[in-house]
Amino acid sequence: MSKLILIIVPLSAALLSCAHEAPPKVVIHDRDWEKGLDEDFSQAIAPLGPIDSDQNAYDLIRRREREHALGSRLTATDLDEIINNSSQVLASALALPLFKAGVYLGQPRLLDRGCTAARRVTHSALRSAGNIEAVLQACAALITGKQSEGGCGEGQQKLREAYALLAGEKGSEAGRAAADAVRALRDRCPKMTAPLRTPVDPSTRGFLIVWTLHANDAPPVSFLAGEIAPNTAEAINEAFLRGVQAVHPATAHNP
Image (cartoon, rainbow, N blue to C red; front, top):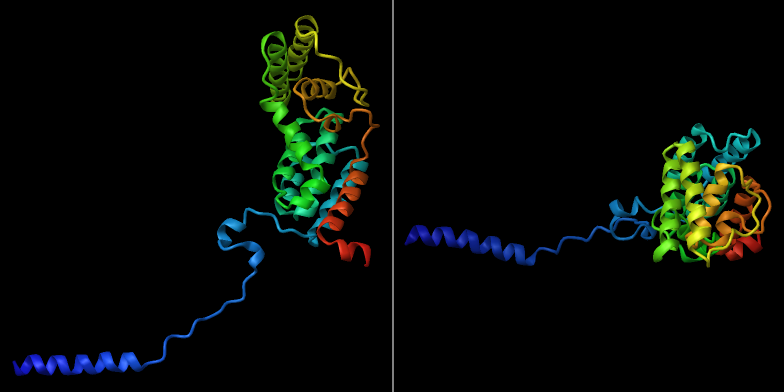
């Protein structure tokens, strides 16, 4: 019994001393709350921006366009890095101009980069300024398209398959498939009209893309309907300015 008392007394004293100790201080760390509560997840969200690297990215795109190398594999690789590291302001500025350039040049790799840029934009004002919804609708039109019955649906599906062949670098097969699809639409889908006027040459791969977008109800702006040949760098710069004004209106108007 005496041993038990000896054990309890020190234990009680220890508990009492703990009761009188000051509670541990809460350490407050500086945080960037724009990254949200989970910083690991936030790494997938582009910074709002603009950021310094946006300028170098634009300079590269402008140079490649002047060199007539905008649709090259090398530029596509550079665009992957540019888009992955861009601000949302730049991503919103890139999306539609890159998509239009892809249509005009008949280069699915540029369309793909335009779609990727569009998906990085989460800021509502930037989505509006960059016409992001139109880009995303056009991206979906190339893959899932408009679901219709009968000859219309068959022709639309064949055009999407032709585009998939083009994206897979099977240009000759894509051209034949697209020609069959357009004939099917003209013969079996009376409501289908020809695409609106576009600067894309009907004899080029780009016109296959125009037909695919048009037949699958993509927004006309995505295939340059009623427009002239695109100046991609200029369009990016103009869209970038709209983006800056959208997220920093006071700074944009009062530099």
